Image 1 (cartoon, helix red, strand yellow):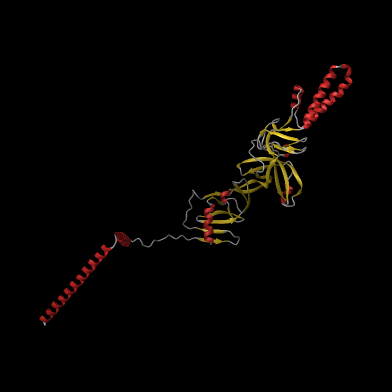
Image 2 (tube, helix red, strand yellow):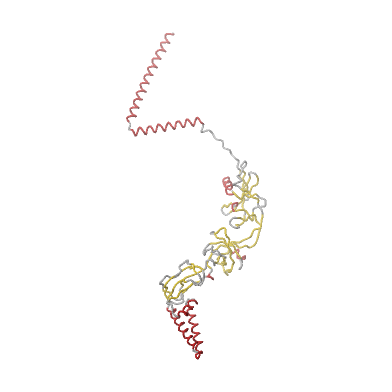
Length: 419
């Protein structure tokens, strides 16, 4: 029995060895075939194959390394219980237990009631003061020879604007010189004193005719001194300001009454405002208003009402008012859009910065702190004071802790919880 088992083991060992030799031969043959196939490839293909093998090796190594260091271990996230309570009035109460707001970002102030002015807003625009603007027009037919001051030019009283040729100016000068000489002759001859008065009247009439054509007293004195007529009439500025608009070109032929140029003082302005119907009873002539412009948000300008229209504008259904504007530095310009505020009384309100007001569509909200980690958002009513402050007339009570900085950020948490 023992010999039989030994024989079986020996034959099994021989069979295993044969199989091992057979597989080794096959592996060697396959390896040689792979080598031959590899070297039979082009150099470019072999290079690409090597890059693919290197990439696969790096990927396998990374996967193994990740398993070793346990990259995919579960991460525990701290969950904070957040609850939102919506009241019947629409106010919201948010609880953030365990959350501490950064005091450098979220600033709370205690609500304090103070006296604030009650004002009405009057939108409008600026315009040149028509009472202090001038229009140069042709007093007689003629031709424009030269222009000295174009649109936007700064002018002084007496500055030449343009030069105009007109036959009537020549004849008026000749009439003046003739009557002047006649008056001098009659004045020297005392026997004809009865005609002197008529000659002086004629001379004065000729001088007035020259003035009516647009000449100045200086031009008449120069004519009287030189005794020579000037071919062209120089039209001069009657005020200090700028040439707003020039209506003619050099060489233009004009008729009597044609506008030559418009002049105005940019510091002399009117405010033309529109008062809504519900505010009409509070507007009176002589009231002082505060103007604000987007061009100068930190400056205040003043105006005094000098005219109130007798009827409403049928299109806007608003009442036009006109005010004289104080513009000593010339900062304001015509056609600027400005907003006027008229103080009509005083009331009590809680004044907060504009950063404390959260605007959602047409509603205005504030956020207060009820306790540690508990906040409440609710609607308030009021009006803007000066673009930087807001007067809350309804909703806030004295002593409430109002969020003045960071209100928009905290409101985002209300919005997310509401969703």
